[in-house]
Image 1 (cartoon, rainbow, N blue to C red):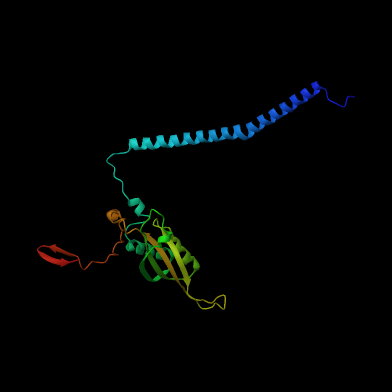
Image 2: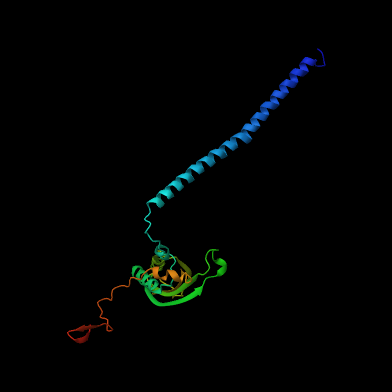
Length: 228
């Protein structure tokens, strides 16, 4: 057997190696260039179609919108008003007191400027109403219900601190340790810098006067003034 390859065999070998190299190159191009590019193209086409549908929908809404319709900040002010609205907060605290079957002993209101470093870039001024509530309750469930009712408000409310005052130690299973005292601090936010939106602030629905007469109300009847 001839140990040396003939010229013909060398040419055939080079052709085979070239074919293998070409196949490998095509495979690499298809798997690493063509298919990823096609997938990216398909994703961009799908995204474009989705954004186009959104644009058409918005254009349709704008076309059907009443040109005389006015834009109001009232829905947003239910979340963060431009005035403190302590009356609304007080009413909510009283509702939470009733639903939790607990008893509010003391409420302290104070205002604080929110830390500037924690504000988003588009918010220039934010203040908080800090409410410190001293609550008397018989069970932890009542405290939990009270906090839940406060946090159920549409307005943003944050529980800052919860402090339990020490109670007498329960030495026997049947012994009654009495009610516990809890001091809970809440934060509610408002934007005092938006002065021009104060007329759109939420109105406080005060509860009825519980069948009590208002001594300051004076009506004129038959030429004489009588107090109700």
